[in-house]
Length: 428
Image (cartoon, rainbow, N blue to C red):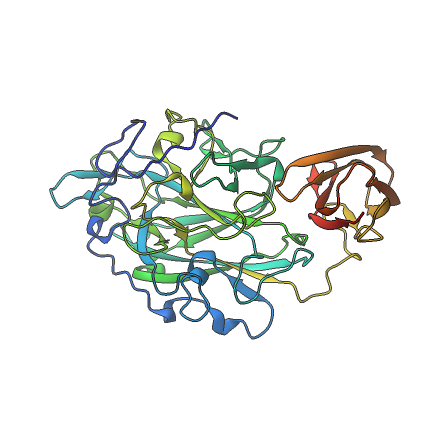
């Protein structure tokens, strides 16, 4: 993967492949693009800390940072409406100078690490279930009322093999989301692909219209238990139920769908990053878009095949934190009695240890097994293969002879799946 961190921001007026972009005063997402949009930060529009008397909990990275009571940047965020459309052969609207604005955001995505939350952080070993998803949106209809548009939501799984570090500044880790340009879809499967845990399609009709930031919820039954310390993600796409031409204007002629996103520290500011950015064990929350030059495979900065994370954009980027909610439950009895991705793993024993430790695990079916050990910077310092193991209970031994005293993390890879990252402590 060849990718370079370059400060870029959205160009509003024309489709461009320039290496450096500057912010236009009427950048897409600002309400000037569609005067019908009426954004509000009214807390009544949001699922918030009042729903947290006990599990399950609603997690929304952007909104929780902005929480008046417990947020890390309280009451500073500005909301913006990000139009989603499958291609650029239509005009989003006209700017103040009557120039056409291209539709340039084609899909949106979020990865959530539930350990970040200032109110109810999940621990490293807290397995969890996801039972619902929600998002703030606006939806304006200009076509025949019989037209049914669709929002598609794909719940995606963590893939540690797609961890990537921006060369900075800031030098932070995030998780790549790979894109298959010919299919205009996620890159699914293989070492560099995305695993879709569930796909949901929500039909949109006149009943869903809103020029304010409304809240839409969907249940997500059947998603497997996620092991502690793992992130979970969502990709959101809009599928129009109508045909269009290049002369159509979304804000005047056609139905328009907008995902609400937050500029975290206020208008025309840089976003903040929370967690230890120098290690892939840190806070890995990130919002992304599929930008038009990646959509058409003409990006000159090394991003072809990847969603762009918000930290790749410069000051003034409007869509830093998409307002997407995950309803997660860590209060159920999810633990060593549950197979997750075909395996259940116990903490190494003893812990701390000075010479040898044993890790017990159980396989649901025969699979290749390997162990990886990382230091606190996220650097892999040891790996061992156990070969193909039969279904049933097994143990492996970790030898600390070559390890200095300190904190380490380990993951077990079973087939194509990785377990949660667990911490072990070496003493000398």
